[in-house]
Image (cartoon, rainbow, N blue to C red; front, side, top):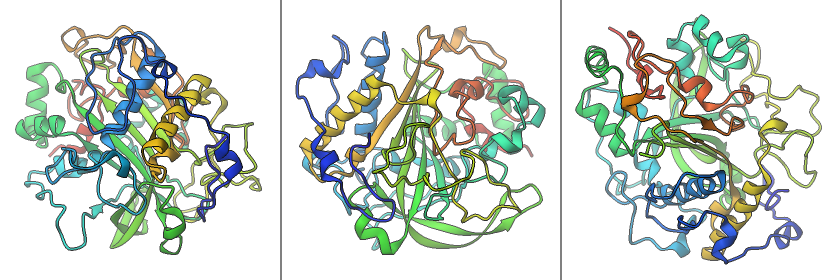
Length: 445
């Protein structure tokens, strides 16, 4: 059941549901393990010093990352504002960027030009640019379809949230996506000039692959448009940021969107992937979060919830990708979480506890309306030096196998992260790129 019933069009609360949620302050109740510090509302990004021995400790690890990375950013890129108070964490109407939003975007990293200076002091505040309507654009464009089919099975055009496919919420607004990386990873790419195809290929050949430094973090986020006439009613329930968003004028011969004029819009966060490479997780820890009212698990529709990506009156088959040139951008997509990816009872309980902790810190915090979906981690990690120099890479005994975010893997929920990412490689060579597809942004000359 949802923490609070929130309409996609309004911010009305169901007080009965809210009163049912309990919160225990006993540290043992988190189930994080004897050697693991419990989550807390703070800006300190947790060290990877807890034994990766079970799923519960990894669930806590995920929440600790989420809480710190969503702290307000300082005037230095990638650094939290240590003067901010926990009592202001997630204050509605605060559109200042979070720590992860201050990271360089994938477009900023893969350009020969120097990225724009980070500034929070402009007259209008920080406004990001965003221009992706799907998560997998570069995968689909740059990997041959036979290889994609081998990776994912089936008809690529139908199951990939790519090649012009998109996701539209029940208000008729398209979802926008962005990818960012922390300073450690972006400095690694730019210092080695891996945005240049010749440098990238030479580097990969010399090192038998492109192996990212420890503590690299990549973020993928999904945002829904918040119409201005709904801003006042929704700002209490979503992390909202301002962004310059383009109009979509149509699609080219490759079914890629043709963008037009940019206008400022308010965007509400609906999905967040966090992947982090550590000594205990060289295959990365894959953490995924969603807004609580995105979509129901199949067979578990809560009639009191007005879902953002599900209409109980719709007769449409769920999780069907729209087709460019046939389907309207404004036609809502019917979405459900497949039963195999249902949030486990253990994670549901942890979510309630963390949401309660956030609420105890700031009763108005928008972050109480987000939930952990799942965490994937290597039970038998393989260090870089022991891995293969051609894809597919070893997966390190990655577990669990059922993990998907309904806003980012809408149409491929039966797949899991490593199905794709173990095959990541440079476009022009056979060398792997450490489970990351970001280097597909580098176009061969």
